[in-house]
Structures are given as C-alpha cells and as structure tokens.
Length: 222
Image (cartoon, rainbow, N blue to C red; front, side):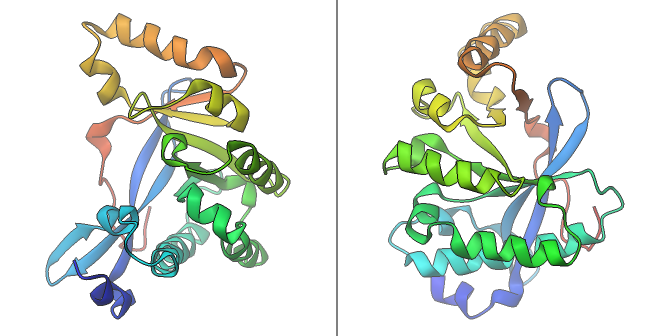
C-alpha cells in the first residue's frame, strides 16, 4: 500500500476488534483495537504501515489516531461499560510525542462519558529503542489517569523480563503460539507461562486465543 493513498483516504481506515481472554477468569474481558484499510471490497491490515519506519512518524500517528477515535466512538455505545479497550501504540512514537496527542484524545472522550479505567495501553517492550527508565516514568504518569498498561508479545522476539519488570505492567499478553512452538505439551506451556509471570506477580495475566483473531468488524456493534 502507498502511504499517501492511506493518508488521502482516511475515511477508509477502520478499526477491527480482537477478543481478549483472561487466563484467570476464562472469559472475554475486552477487545484489542486493530487497524484495517478498505480497498474496494477487500479489507487489509494496517500492520505493515504502522511498522514501516520509513513512513513519517506524523503519518503513522495520524492514522493511529483515526483508528483509535473510530473505535472509541463505538465503545461509547457499547452495552457493557466494564469492557476493557486495548489500544496498541508504538512506544517509540509515544516517547517522541511525550504521549500528549494520545492522552488529549482520551481526555476528550472522558468528557463524553468514557471511563479511562477501561483503557489499556498496549506496547511491545522488545521493539522499544529508547531509555527504558524514561518510558517507565511516562507510563507511570499515564497510570495517574486510571489507564492500565499491558506488555504484549511475551514469548516472541527478544522479550527481556528485567526490562518488562521495570515497566510494571498491569497486564501481560502472552503469545501462546510462540510458546507452543517450543513446548512438547500443554503442561510444559503452562510451566513456561508461570516462568514468565514470576518476576511480576500479583498482576493480572492474560492470553489471546489466536483462533479469535479478526472476530469483529467495524459495523458499529461489539
């Protein structure tokens, strides 16, 4: 996709929703907001757009804001006010912006009746290139507004448990697909999850069942 096509057709930028399951409660507790783009009758992922560092930062941030705003409009009318809303953000871009545009957007929706305690800011630790202590300070500040922090893709890439511990996430999202590749049975997978959770106990641990990916489209309902 040509980034300029996306920037000139923001009306075709859409949020999709992936169910999030709690490993403790064994039920759906929220939805992760994912970016999609409509091309004719096809819907394609915006993942490559967001991950392409050759695309100007302001382009990626603007499209991310469009996805988030459309999703929050939908959640405002959600029948379950306790549903958590998982919003992915590039931690590197958050640090450049000092989270101001993202936080200001959330505060505008708070005035419309959205509780910020429903918001879960989701970042990928192993993709962050800056000072992890500065990121930790930024996330601590955002928590003062009731926003929860999640670290995703645990078990994928080069996740560093010491760095994750510094961020003190409220939620860990574990990539079971990656863990199962290295586990010979489900009990071994469970043991691996307990190993991951050990440095950050007394937290709320989650997993995503990958079979529920792309479960909902932006039809105005959850």
